[in-house]
Length: 501
Image 1 (cartoon, rainbow, N blue to C red):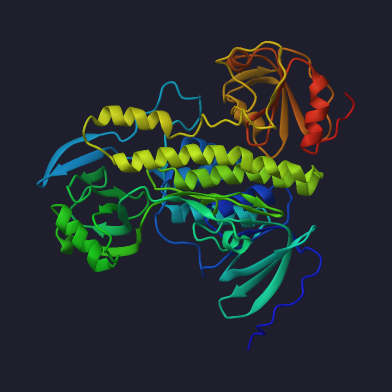
Image 2 (cartoon, rainbow, N blue to C red):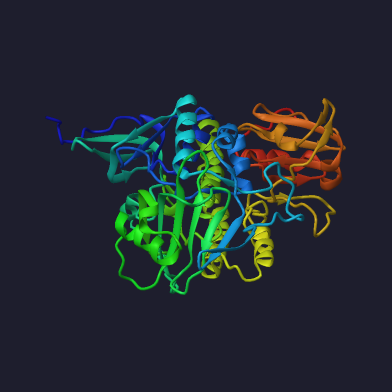
């Protein structure tokens, strides 16, 4: 019989304990593990979450996954979104695109969103985490936590009832909208539902429907959509619900399809995963309390309009991962972690507003081309910037007001370096390090841990102009300067020595 009494924790057994093995938690754990940070993930469920859930990977998220080394697996397991197909009275009314790529969007090797069932994204991230030396434990639920000036002690209860205490230098709550971590800290999640309609999402198998389209049935009671999921025989169902009383079961899901489409309930041959939810928009009062931080849905929740939910959590993780890495491995000042909330709170607020607006609008078949163009302009996340952060310093004497600035995601453009041509900048940036670009000028001596490239031409040089550009590990410009005199102070902020400059 397992001993239910937790043991006294000793010195921190790990650097970072991540609570929650969703997309946010696994992305963060992968980023930390590749930096040599001792990382352990616990997940309350006995297995990773099932279901297609957040199936849309936006352009910026694909860039993150490219950097983490999982984009090829995601490419193999997904597809572009198929065109929309509208139905009325059992007749096809024509097809249209949900999203039209924005020709003015920042350059990216991933210009279109990618369709992957969330369960597959989780499987791919889990395998990458284990390859990198991180560890994952399912059936392990956080039940309480305390912290001191040097560590966090977490009580973990296993599915067999056994309890143990584990210690870590830092703990990150990525455990969803009902976050145990957030509640343990007494941090409120403030917001409102804004009159948003409830909805059902499910994975179903249906006879008599082609898999070349994302099918939509407009209905006064609420639109219903069936999207084919690549590499499976499933469709993801989305349906808005009128009224508050609804219980999601295989029978009620079949009933929805029969009531709002030309398909019969018998055409639904299987109902796998399903969920009923009441969307709301809310933000945690703060994202950090001492050595504990919040990310993803634990920090902010919003409706699924525009396919932003999974993606914003991944961006949280990508912002936080390098900062924790610098503090843990490079002895950067602990205050560096304060910049996480400053930068991601503003980005989250913008996403919450956008998601709410798109959820209310739905996937309208009225003037679909204009709506598709709008979605193409606002959903890719390539334009998110941190210009107002203390970690964004633009010390150039002259710069164009409309040009690239410190805090922006650096343009992923072709360039020429002293080592030869490069098809895309992000090929040079791949990996967990800072990179100094000396554009049309000589690079200064650099400390260990700082890569340097001398850029002598190409579209990137034209876009950036002459100067020194320090690129953070998350591909945002930290420092833009004419000379190296500002470099020492910035590097000290992020835990890199000044070297012989």
